[in-house]
Length: 123
Image (cartoon, rainbow, N blue to C red; front, side):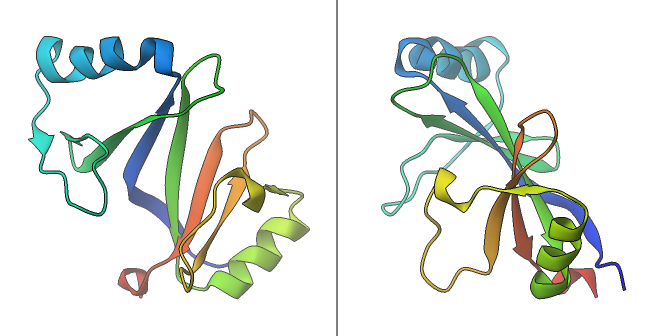
């Protein structure tokens, strides 16, 4: 049976250091998106982006910005099998996830990274 998938709440923009301040200024000062409070455990700037959250991550070693998307599923194991059977490339080495986190990384055919994570809100 095919697992359910739906868009998650998070969009991460991975930005090289040489473009970071200008990009942050663009969303904060030029566009005027509403910033969300940072927390002690994660000081990454975040903004309301419609009903989504836009994260601006400064990443060393990048030559250009990347967009990473979150996809929710109702059944992590079934989703992993289904995506593998469909030829989707898994790339868990791209960024470590917290211990116990129910999720994994994949890339679409255009190399856009997606975090696949389990959500009980789909049932």
